[in-house]
Image 1 (cartoon, rainbow, N blue to C red):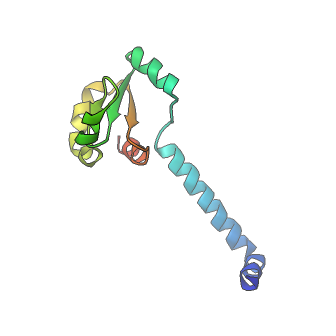
Image 2 (spheres, one colour):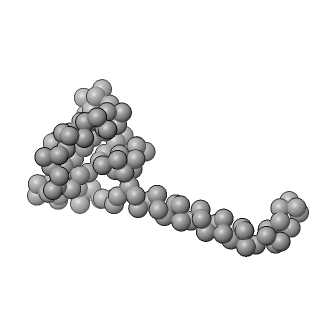
Image 3 (cartoon, rainbow, N blue to C red):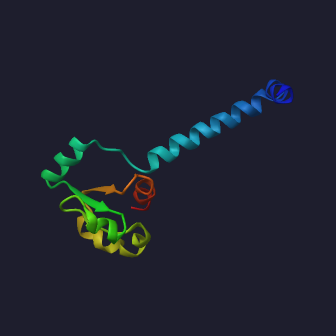
Length: 110
């Protein structure tokens, strides 16, 4: 522990630069995925016809229950099925999945 504290005190410029880079990475990754919406915002956009809802769960999970009007494009097939979304290019695309872990990556792809 003493060596660690000595390193930080001697190399404070490098440590500060490292922490700054980590912060920039986190902020950049957060904004790459797109804006997170509340349930009320999603409902308003869908009711107004301004949004397209894409469910990226696999077909089995989609069949067990999904949001009305959602289009199922499994995450593993997203790159090959992008042409299905071309007709809705002017609409907002809302991506949903089971836990939200793949939605950010799908948002970056879209």
